[in-house]
Image (tube, rainbow, N blue to C red; front, side):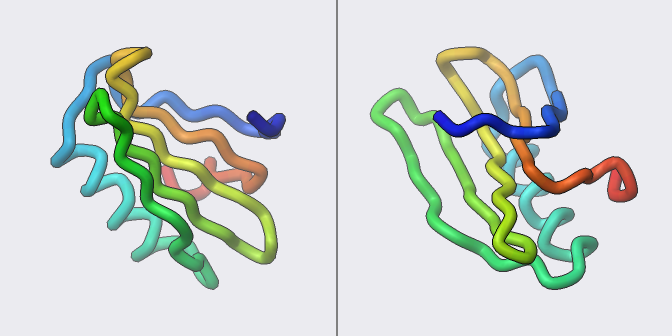
Length: 80
Protein backbone atom coordinates (compact mmCIF):
# COMPACT_ATOMS: atom_id res chain seq x y z
CA UNK A 1 0.00 0.00 0.00
CA UNK A 2 1.18 3.52 -0.75
CA UNK A 3 2.64 5.82 1.85
CA UNK A 4 0.31 8.55 3.03
CA UNK A 5 1.20 11.86 4.64
CA UNK A 6 -1.78 11.94 7.01
CA UNK A 7 -3.65 9.40 9.15
CA UNK A 8 -6.97 10.11 10.84
CA UNK A 9 -8.66 7.76 13.31
CA UNK A 10 -12.43 8.20 13.14
CA UNK A 11 -13.67 5.39 15.42
CA UNK A 12 -12.23 2.42 17.30
CA UNK A 13 -14.98 0.15 15.97
CA UNK A 14 -16.53 -0.88 12.67
CA UNK A 15 -19.83 0.69 11.65
CA UNK A 16 -21.29 0.82 8.15
CA UNK A 17 -23.55 3.82 8.89
CA UNK A 18 -20.74 5.87 10.45
CA UNK A 19 -18.48 4.99 7.50
CA UNK A 20 -21.17 6.29 5.11
CA UNK A 21 -21.67 9.46 7.19
CA UNK A 22 -17.92 10.12 7.12
CA UNK A 23 -17.83 9.68 3.34
CA UNK A 24 -20.81 12.00 2.87
CA UNK A 25 -19.18 14.62 5.12
CA UNK A 26 -16.00 14.56 3.02
CA UNK A 27 -18.05 14.87 -0.17
CA UNK A 28 -19.99 17.82 1.25
CA UNK A 29 -17.14 19.81 2.79
CA UNK A 30 -14.07 19.32 0.59
CA UNK A 31 -14.08 21.50 -2.51
CA UNK A 32 -13.20 19.68 -5.72
CA UNK A 33 -13.37 16.18 -4.23
CA UNK A 34 -13.97 13.40 -6.75
CA UNK A 35 -15.36 10.02 -5.77
CA UNK A 36 -13.28 7.07 -6.93
CA UNK A 37 -13.53 3.32 -6.48
CA UNK A 38 -15.55 1.66 -3.70
CA UNK A 39 -14.41 -1.79 -2.57
CA UNK A 40 -16.15 -4.25 -0.24
CA UNK A 41 -13.96 -7.11 0.97
CA UNK A 42 -15.08 -10.66 1.74
CA UNK A 43 -14.92 -9.87 5.49
CA UNK A 44 -17.38 -6.95 4.91
CA UNK A 45 -14.62 -4.32 5.24
CA UNK A 46 -15.23 -1.25 3.08
CA UNK A 47 -12.90 1.15 1.31
CA UNK A 48 -13.93 4.36 -0.46
CA UNK A 49 -11.31 6.19 -2.51
CA UNK A 50 -11.45 9.92 -3.28
CA UNK A 51 -9.23 12.29 -5.22
CA UNK A 52 -8.57 16.00 -4.67
CA UNK A 53 -6.27 17.66 -7.21
CA UNK A 54 -4.73 14.27 -8.08
CA UNK A 55 -4.06 13.51 -4.39
CA UNK A 56 -5.63 10.43 -2.82
CA UNK A 57 -7.91 10.10 0.22
CA UNK A 58 -8.85 6.58 1.33
CA UNK A 59 -11.62 5.94 3.89
CA UNK A 60 -11.52 2.51 5.58
CA UNK A 61 -14.17 0.63 7.54
CA UNK A 62 -11.87 -2.24 8.50
CA UNK A 63 -13.08 -5.42 10.18
CA UNK A 64 -9.47 -6.66 10.21
CA UNK A 65 -8.28 -3.69 12.27
CA UNK A 66 -11.64 -3.02 13.95
CA UNK A 67 -11.76 0.68 13.16
CA UNK A 68 -12.84 3.43 10.81
CA UNK A 69 -9.90 5.52 9.63
CA UNK A 70 -8.64 7.69 6.79
CA UNK A 71 -5.28 7.61 5.02
CA UNK A 72 -4.66 10.74 2.99
CA UNK A 73 -2.17 12.79 1.04
CA UNK A 74 -4.42 15.81 1.67
CA UNK A 75 -4.39 17.64 5.03
CA UNK A 76 -7.95 17.24 6.30
CA UNK A 77 -7.50 19.03 9.64
CA UNK A 78 -9.60 21.96 8.39
CA UNK A 79 -12.55 19.60 7.93
CA UNK A 80 -12.53 17.92 11.37
